[in-house]
Image (cartoon, rainbow, N blue to C red; front, side, top):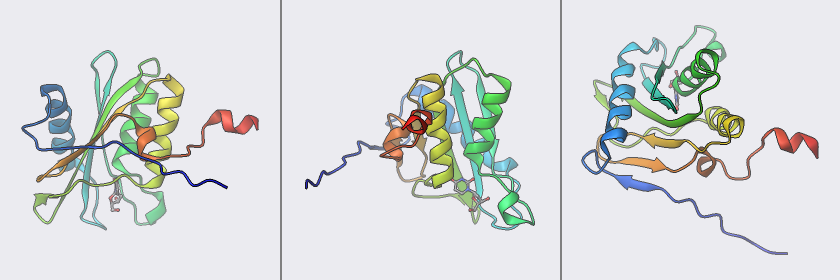
Length: 160
Ligand code: THU
């Protein structure tokens, strides 16, 4: 029997420490929180996806009176990108959360279902996507969605 430690590299940084490209995609995610439809939680999440050709696709959470029918911002953005630009690999994803009149001080953390969809996207295009979780105090940057979901389940796993 062996026990392994799984180490996950995460860069913790301020807004000023981000590159111009990172700031640009985070700014889009922040803007997008204004369009969230979240009458039940009041928790506004904005997501912005940057594609290989530079196209930016936006998403925000869409809630529903039948709660499970709603969808998180990340999946709205990733599914829109897959539907509108199926040939374009996803290079970067940023999310920002806004509640009680301000952006959250600490980064929002994607739910398990969104992590699984990020993984499928990376597997589909054979392209890691940088994931930026924005917080007003500090942000977290992951080099790949796989770092957010160790021991992933992808299509190859179906082959036994
Ligand atoms: N939500 C997202 O859109 N993304 C996340 O990463 C976490 C949660 C949404 C779902 C729901 O509309 C609200 O935030 C509260 O959970």
